[in-house]
Length: 177
Ligand SMILES: C[S@@+](CC[C@H](N)C(=O)[O-])C[C@H]1O[C@@H](n2cnc3c(N)ncnc32)[C@H](O)[C@@H]1O
Image 1 (cartoon, rainbow, N blue to C red):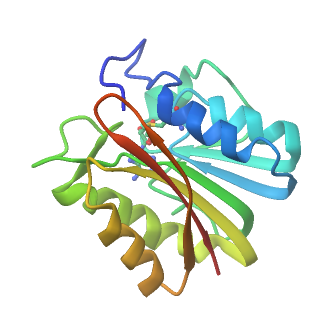
Image 2: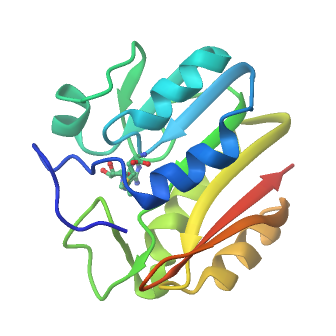
Image 3: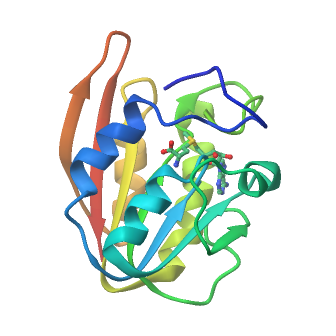
């Protein structure tokens, strides 16, 4: 996970972004949601393969100046602004285990669980029947606790890919309801 940004605190497409891309580029369907859109890189990719795509981010400035702009951007936490159900949801989570939240793009709070939990609690309400929720986490967080929590919410989860980097291992999880 990268900690130096381009402009307006936008998290630039990084190893974790490309790791997700490698694993979702063949997904297609109707309604897709990218939570924590950041630069918009994943939102844009989804808009090539899904009929209707929304990107959300808690950081308004980031959405306002996104590098990879798409049409439907909403500033909110997780998917809190929606009643709509989505078939496919992706999130490059702020997963770093941190004492506090100093950097909203990367810091996940205690055990890297605090912020992802909020996002899960939000997203679960917007999953259509047979929806897929893909998220990335890492060896730098208590990722097992996060997977256990997704299961507590009633999601079936499986680790679908891992990627070793110099200082961490990225873990991609697929959850279905
Ligand atoms: C690691 S960056 C990922 C950016 C981009 N999706 C990518 O893969 O390169 C995480 C993004 O999530 C956003 N974020 C943090 N907490 C959030 C929350 N509770 N709800 C929505 N977005 C959040 C941050 O502002 C940041 O843009």
